[in-house]
Length: 531
Image (cartoon, rainbow, N blue to C red; front, side, top):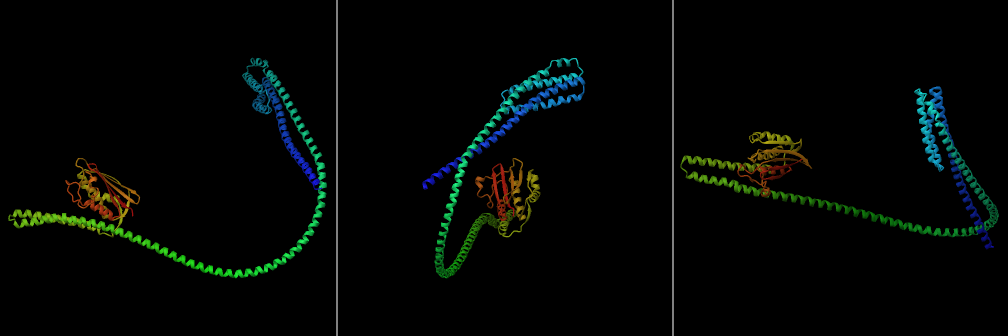
């Protein structure tokens, strides 16, 4: 029984599969037939268009010929409207005809090209004949007219049009035959599907009825099974309720225990937060201590550096006192001894003069030291806005006599830079450097001074360049700004100017740099703090 049902099922599935395949094939054929019919319709349309276009060419030839003869007979301008229409439409008609024939793979398109040239030549001839009529040259017009060029063109094109008509008729016939063959194939396939589908549908109806009977029996059996399951479910429900009650009691006990755990966790969390807060405070204190240690370390470094500088200055003062003050003092002692033993009045006058000079030298050294100490002990300086350009001009006015005497040229190229600084210091710096340039000029050439300013980073840089004697930097670079340091012994000076310039620039929070070469000149770069 089971084997028979299995065999029938397989047979039914096979028949249904075959029917499905045939239906798919049928749908495909119907779709292909639809596409084929559309293509044939397009082909028929092209065929009709080709026929009409070939006839339109003939019609244009007739129009041209009739218009030519009518104008020749009547001389009326409206007769020429037909020639204009023929000439305008002729290229369009030929183009449409060529496209239609190309789409159908017509094998004599070269003949169409030749005919197009022939018709165009005939139209040109007609234009020439119309000109003869317009010019009243009626003796030449009949000669050209009797040549019957239009007839020959018409006959050639008529033969081509007949060939196109025959070709298009064959194309239409082939297209209709293909359509009929496709329709017959579709009809046969549908008939075959019908023969297979009717028995299969009958068998399916029989099987479906039988399935309904089996389904009803299964429904009754399922109902009985459901009743049994319902009884079992009621018993299980009772047992579940008892277990649920036991679980609820256990859950209440667990819940109370969990509440205790939550309280303990909260206490632990508060303790952790307290520990974290204390750790954060300790970390902050450590950072503050580290910052304080770093600050005090920096203060110590600054203090050590200042002590070192102070020690250097003290050594320089010691040198000044031991050398610059000792020499005049020794001279005074010697002159006092001479004065004690001298009897001549003239000698005593000379000794008095030398004593006065030695005292003045001592006074000058003391005043120089006072100026240096004044600069060094100024911890708080009164600052104001200083226009660097105006300050340089002020110094140049002060030194204008010296500049004129040495015939110096000054190239001043400064902007309008202004700084917050101590005006007397700035003026002193400019005065010392410009006066030094005049004092230590090269006697073999005229002095040239260039004074330029520009801004770099947070400083205003003022360059003062001269073409004077210059300084040997390889020899004096390290002691360039020392007290009483002189580089040209043949020129009078104390060696105090550059030391004062450096001291004043440092007091202003700036710096000075020097570039120099012997017999070429010197460039001083002054960096003033913009603040």
